[in-house]
Image 1: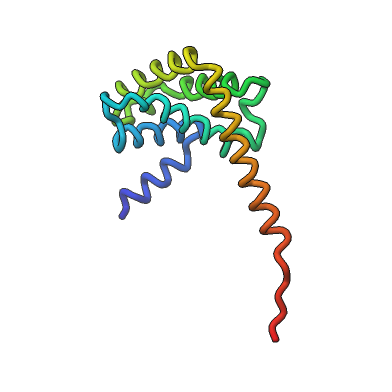
Image 2: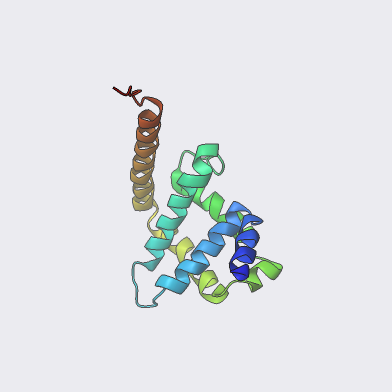
Length: 145
């Protein structure tokens, strides 16, 4: 149990970018297969989901009107965190670096399609946010009989 508390405390000290790296490192542990031709696409979806959940609401990495460019801004910030003891602590640093390189190539080759995917996921995210704010702020008050 003490090891878990240490890990939880360690995770809490990380930046959001570093937490994303840890998530991807864990994802590699659970799901990486060199034969998986969709793996880089799945990695892109993780980046989009993370961007929408943690950075989009605060307008961080949102300078461009092109959403894929915003993902690349976030990606560069994530890369800046790959240094020193932090990268040494990762379980799959070699695969992670290889997949980050593959992700850049994938985005470059599929820019238009990935922009559309981002727009669709963003619409779903915004719908979910609006729905949850409407249902929580307009709950009818029930009176007991």
